[in-house]
Image 1 (cartoon, rainbow, N blue to C red):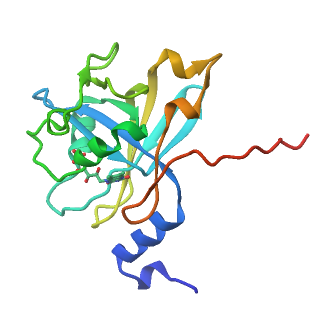
Image 2: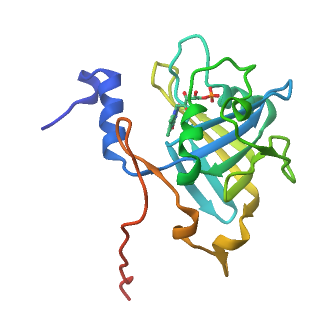
Length: 201
Ligand SMILES: Cc1cc2nc3c(=O)[nH]c(=O)nc-3n(C[C@H](O)[C@H](O)[C@H](O)COP(=O)(O)O)c2cc1C
């Protein structure tokens, strides 16, 4: 099947992308409004970009013509955020925070999750997360203001927090982290079925 994205509905192109780019890691992003209201939301259009310096990126999309995602507005205003990695143990709480609620709702409270103070940035990190990355905004690349158009938020990790019992010599144990990945539709995956490939010399 050959598909011309320009001749397709944006919602169908979105379905193609989220069904093809799988599994996707989930950035559970905490941010804070200028009035210091905490915000927490999952973003699976998420990737690492650079290790030196450590830089990550994720993409809030436009789903309402009159306003942007709260996460994007907060980061635009404060230039700080935290990426928390989602483990299977709090996937349902993560899902609760993806509800479309007004900016004055604190999603930590909504999902019964625990904010703890970050070291270097104002937004709190998530106590339940085994890995959190405190980030400072480098750039927001605006791709499109159309519905389902995205922006790419690029941030430098200025501090990592890793739970002591999942790390050894900088190596993270995935059996202890228990990360989940997002598939298409409403599906997720665990990461138990893994295999190894030696790199060619
Ligand atoms: C697992 C998961 C991944 C998501 N990934 C994205 C994403 O990459 N980009 C996006 O714009 N919305 C994504 N969403 C939807 C947002 O999380 C949701 O709309 C949320 O309410 C946005 O919150 P905010 O306005 O507080 O930033 C995702 C939802 C879930 C459950």
